[in-house]
Length: 127
Image (cartoon, rainbow, N blue to C red):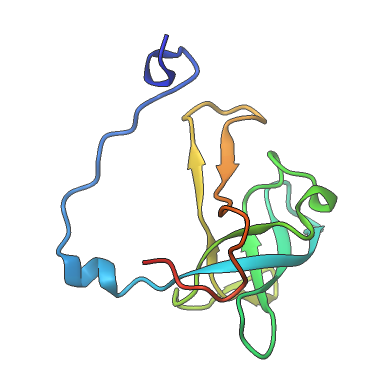
């Protein structure tokens, strides 16, 4: 079977087409996870400190606690939506969003953070 034919894989319908100018507004950056911890009073959230090449690292909340242990993420590179409007969560602001892929299954192996190839550095913009 191919991945798309696997019983655990649920192909989600494609979203409606967007104009290139709309896509160009999204600023995707390589981020390095400097710190990560579970959020008290939340079963879903992890709080991450991420370097995206700016002077100060960013605080980002992500609903990936069921899929990843905080200690396994520290030091890893991932992809961040850097120009997402900050959102107040759990008494602090989330300053971006991590990109991940999902196989549609609600299992601990069903979500995959995007990781760049070796050589990518924090702050690099995806084009």
